[in-house]
Image (cartoon, rainbow, N blue to C red; front, side):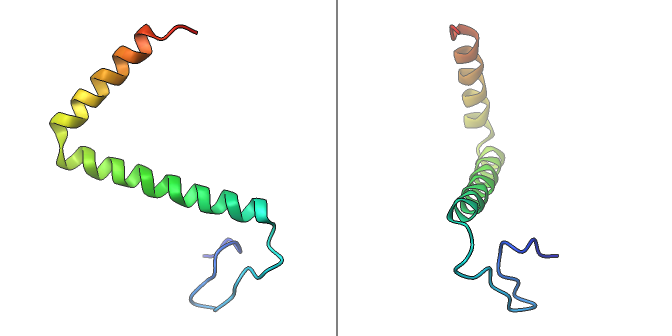
Length: 67
């Protein structure tokens, strides 16, 4: 199941040099954000006390933030 943006190892297709740079940047950014979210989830699972403290700090920041 390929989107046409990433090389498909099963077919050997490559988006090629004619790919729009903005599209490529967005694709790389989306992949980075997915990896970052996955890393955060893993860290939260292996360090639950730290994750809880971070959630409480974030909640306090959001309550005291002025728009």
